[in-house]
Length: 225
Image (cartoon, rainbow, N blue to C red):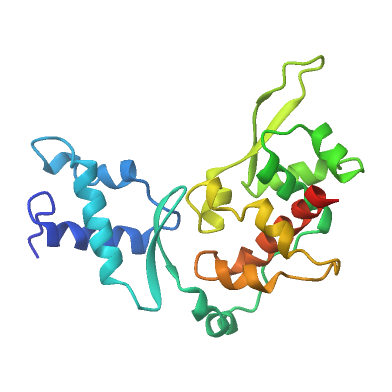
């Protein structure tokens, strides 16, 4: 097969498809462009050309068990949410479960960032175990993004692009608004906000969906109490 992706849109989509299916992590436009630099007299395909090819490739996979999506870290193929009940039977291991303290801390950082450890403690009303911050950093969900200009210069934490990608999101603006969550939260601590579950089911990676609901619920409670 003599592919010429720089000159033929169909060949370009074939190469993009192969790269994305083989990739372990999402691929950004910069990652994808590197594949074609040595074959082009212009040294690089235009971003618009790549985006158009990716959009067409996404359309070609529409309605199948696997879909092409754009997340914060780039583009990736992933199984559709409705496939999970069957695919989960192939796995013996269970997804990692996090304590309520970890999820509450993650929620506070996600919705109030940038925040210091002191901010988190003020909201939760208890001290933050350093292992909680370490767990979230090791998971790649939060990172230190600076220091507050006050005595002691405490570290400011924020969420990462990896956090958004794990949730199938591109930007923080796609998180459920706290105002909407406040109207859905019930006094029952085990409530999972079924209305929100239905609204987000098509957009959130199944393995982390429960964490999104729980963390969002926790922060919503701090807003309305």
